[in-house]
Every structure is written in C-alpha cells, then in structure tokens.
Length: 146
Image (tube, rainbow, N blue to C red; front, side, top):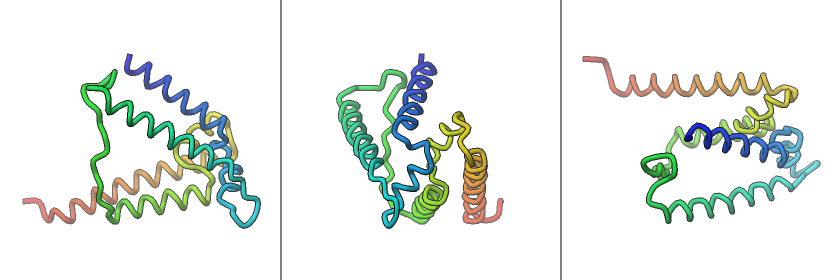
C-alpha cells in the first residue's frame, strides 16, 4: 500500500508541476527575468505550496504516526554550513540558467521538452560528483586508515 500511495503522490505532484507551468523552462525563466518579460504567476504557485505545506505540517503534528511508516521524519538540522550554501548556490544557478529545478525537469522528460535530457543528465552527473567529493573530503578529514 505504501508503494501505491507513493506512486499516486508522485503522479499528483507531476500533474501539478505541469498545470502550474513549472515544467516549462520558458515560464520559469520569464519569472526570473525582472528587467524583461517578467511573469509573476509562479509566485502564486509558490504561495500555494507554502500554504499547503504549512497546513500539512500542522496536520502531521496532530497525529501519533504517519499512515505508512513507524514514525515521522521531520527535518532536524538547523546549521548553515558550506555544503548547504554551495548546494543552494548550484541549485539556483542551475535553475536560473536552465529554467528547471529537479522535480519539474524529471516531469518534463515525459513531455519530451527541448533540452530536458541534457539538463537531467548534467544534473545527475553533478549530484554524483557532489556525493563523490563529499565522500572524498570525509576520507581526507578522517586521516589515513589504521
């Protein structure tokens, strides 16, 4: 049942991305172009997402446990460090240059949108490279193996 709920949630999320225009890089780039063809409509998408998330978190806090798991997995990290800032900067650069963020990019693969395959491939390579660099830096920080 958990897999079915996950699949349905993903389908609903993907449909929402398509309907809102988030899977259209031209719409996203116009949202980011304040000096040119600015399209503020995605601000309403973000506002709606904030409201839904706020309500969802409040409802989750009233339950003892989720429907398909033993416990809730709420974010606990509160520190702002170099990896967080680097990740946020690379996310913003990718979004601003390509017009996609990861979710809509994967959704746009199904739509066969221009440039999506290249963007998703580069995104996956970047994710792999970031993980490999993090692992390598962790090894270097730990010192030589005993």
